[in-house]
Length: 363
Image (tube, rainbow, N blue to C red; front, top):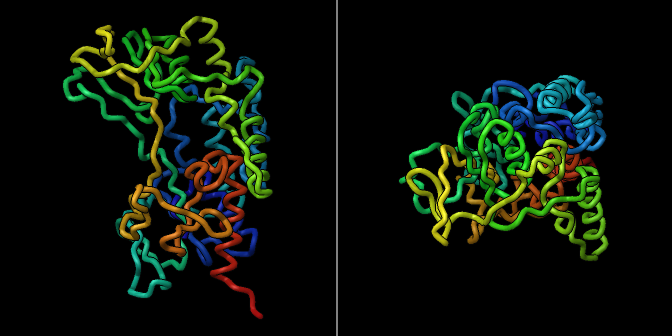
């Protein structure tokens, strides 16, 4: 059973099928969404990948090339191109996810610690020997708690809530965060609104000629170094923000200046420790996401620090219940596993371990 049919779930499905397992017969993909594409259809207008198709593809089939009629984003596909690719991908390989079925919980079907699991969704209950959780993070946007949140009279939005920067036209917007989402949304929103950028530390911009290709290569080098027993910084030493065309254009307009993080929210804006204040109609939190793992809560997979330890030959098997694997949640479930191209490597390793355990070869 694969829970989730976004990019991670599709990659797992592809590798299961490649090893001879038949969708809806040997394995099943359940998806909460009512249409293909994972989280991509719910992202904001104007979002573009920061890698070309060759570095943004799932295993088995390369994403088709894309040409921007304006030439601005030439070669870097927009959201809708990604959605079309993922839609065609699941059809191409006949993965046939069942949707919409939002899994509410995964529980042990009986008292046997090695027995089947029961996967439940409204109106549906399915037994499975192994559950691969591939639900991603989009459904769990992280909003930090700040003093004054209850007093603030304006709107608080997370990046996951925003559909179009045009929604904020003519307003005063404080954009919070120091990563790619914050920089890209600041660039778009600042075209139509009065923006202030704040971050807990100064954003680190990658050189203009560095994009997702270099990041993936760095992640690959980290994997090889780790396999060889040598240290490697991965992508950590490169920077945080990819200078995509809209970010470059915003830099040229002089709006890419982040102020230190404010101390609290006020009724009509934000305030810093030195007494400086800023009025704001909207606070836009670009503060990341957490893994969407509530469906696994009954299995008590978390350790004392609240993390889900993973291991096995794939690096994705839950240490506290070997019937569960977690794919696509970030580097802790495989380097670059939250990316389109990176998840294929993790999915392949996961499927190899699952198939070896679930469908052992005869002696």
